[in-house]
Image (cartoon, rainbow, N blue to C red; front, side):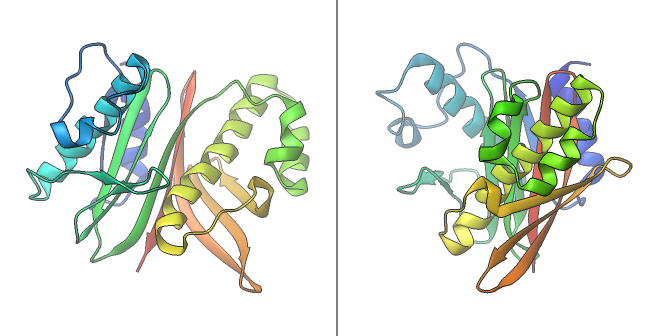
Length: 221
């Protein structure tokens, strides 16, 4: 089983059954889903076009499962995908893989999904990305590979949070505003962030492979 298949299998075991997930390897030659969506990347580089097309391909496969076979996935001024009424979703990709997450809005207000490489967050970047408590956690991990993977999961969870939160609140945050706690036994995560004078918490889950990590943040009704 390849890396992305393992990640998808692990994530599906952690997500609720009514949350749909699809993804795969970004391949050359993937055709655009439709002409209207293709206009968003018609002037982009070939690599960006492939990433966009693959992400939309898997998003449409999920939309087909909930009855939206001809829907055009738009994009707002911030590049966020625009879903049909009654549906919430999210798309993510690295240079190698792409993934889409989808659910009906009768139960969920928003979703966020993120893929990241697991070995690129050097310690010199930590003060810009992580709260002090997160840095202390990372410094206590003696194994270098596990420490890098842990850092990637925390960072990915913050990216997934932004994708989940922005459609609801249209706010931008610093990475250090959010704090992530991981449960390595259950692969669940908790993200907390200050808002309107209080502390708000989001739940999610993660999967970690040899080269990539995947995280999801879920906002339920």
